Length: 149
Length: 149
DNA sequence: TATTGTTATACTCTATAACTATA
DNA sequence: TATAGTTATAGAGTATAACAATA
Image 1 (cartoon, rainbow over the protein chains, first blue to last red):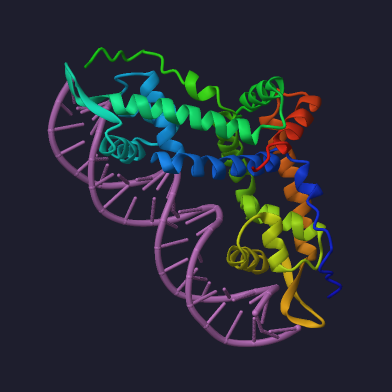
Image 2 (image 1 turned 90 degrees about the horizontal axis):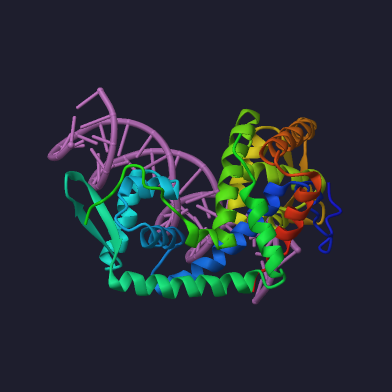
C-alpha cells in the first residue's frame, strides 16, 4: 500500500507496443503545434483543410466538401460561415440548381492559402526535423495504408 | 459560377503533402475502430490507457498518472472514479502521506486488462493488415521521432 | 509555500435529428 | 421522394480556475 517513490520511473511499455498509442501521441503533438501556427492566421485545423479543398476544387458544394473533410454537412455550415465572414471564400450560386452553393476562394482567400501553406510547411519541417525527406515519405505512405475493416 | 459535375473527382493533393493530414486521417480511423472494440469491454481509449499504466505501475498516484497520460489531474479524477466504480482498480492509501492515493488494479482489473490487451491487439492486426511486422515497427519508430519544438 | 486531489465550469469538435426549399 | 443546406441540441474529451486537506 505504499512505497511510492518520487523518482520511480513510470513506464508505458505495454502501451508502446501499439501503433495506435504512438500515433495518438504523435498526432496530439502535431495538433497542438499546428493550432498555434494557424491561430495568428485566423484559421483552425479544419478550416485550413476546408480552405485547401476549396482552393483546389473551385465551385465545390457544401455537401461534397463535407465528404472530402469526413464531417457532417451540418458542420460544414459553420465552417463555411466562418470562412465567408473572414472574406476568404464566397458562396456562389449554381445556375440550374438553387439548392446548392458553389464555394470558391476570394482573392484574399487565395493569399491566405498561400500564406498558410507556407506556415504549415514550416511547422512540419520543425516537428519532423529528425526525419529525412525519405523517412517523411515513408511515414506518409505507411499511414495511408492504415485501412478500415 | 456553375459547372459542378456530380461526378467531378474531389482532390486533396495539397493536403496530402502534409504528414499531419495523413496522420489525422489514420488516427481517426484507428480511434473509431478502437472505440467499437473497447465499448463492449466497458472501456474508452483513455481508460484503457489508464488501466495499462496502473497495471504496469502499481501504486502510482493520480498526479503521476496524469503526467503519464498527458492530461490534467482534474481529468484523472473522473477517469479513476470510472475505473474504481467498475471495480477494475482501487484507491489505496499511502502510509506517510495522506494526500495521495496508491492506485492499483483489482483482480477483476487484471483480468480486464488481459482481455482488453488481446482485443486491442486484434484490432491493430485488422487495421494494419496491409503492413508487414517490419513495416509496423518502422511506423512506430517514425511516429516516435515526431518531436515538439 | 507546495502538492494532491477535488469540484464546477467552459470550450472545442463533432454528431444527430428535425426542418425548409428546392429538385 | 431525394437532395442541399440549415438550425438546435447534445455528447465526448479536455482544460482552467478555485478550493480543502495535507505536507
